[in-house]
Image (cartoon, rainbow, N blue to C red; front, side, top):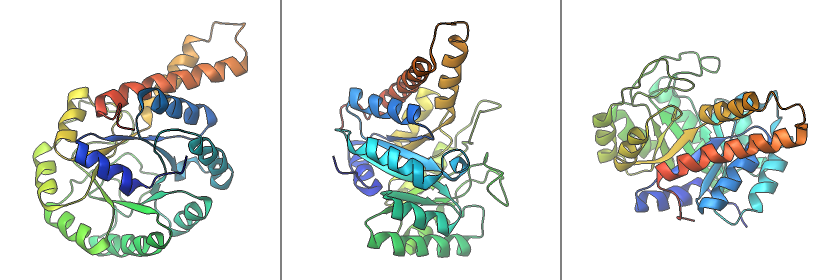
Length: 280
């Protein structure tokens, strides 16, 4: 089945008032788990690769596996580059066959962010590749940014940013963080409503792992169409490994299959909360 771009999948989500799960993956077990979950629930899905995975799974090598598996799916699959802070990485992703990219200059001044995003849009549009960008900043990726403080998205800046850049989706900062929450998150739903009122684009929530089902449902009601998940997948995989630690008869192949199943179960739970089940 042909791959989908982000714009197509998220416009359908916006019309249907549900969200599509963006699941960051870096090995075969994770890709299999996510795709199996999407097939079983008949959910559209986004497979995402992050710059932080380069050392473990070089893009050009892993993309062949990820895209090959994605093309065998019978549901809409987007192959997305997550949190690219360098233009070179985006060009590599486009050449590898990714259908969507995220340019992230959210820690920079607004004019710099606009310029970097606009340049990315101009190039990617030629290849039919969708572009997501972030305004405000979701903390938790300090090794990638000069400034990793959590800053809410400014409503007027969001309106200007969307108009001047031509992006297909806008990631907003409303109180989430990447990684494990150290305290109960407090989301600024009013800010999300204000952004939605002036930005006519699908909105994206980063730092989704750890939020409650009601947090997810409320943000989706208020315009979130894409939710990024990574930490919860890794926690599910690690829990399964620890659970199996005492089984001396478990082969490595079977262990990998068990990890894929754990990822699948976690993804299915998220897809049900996001409302994407049966939408493929």
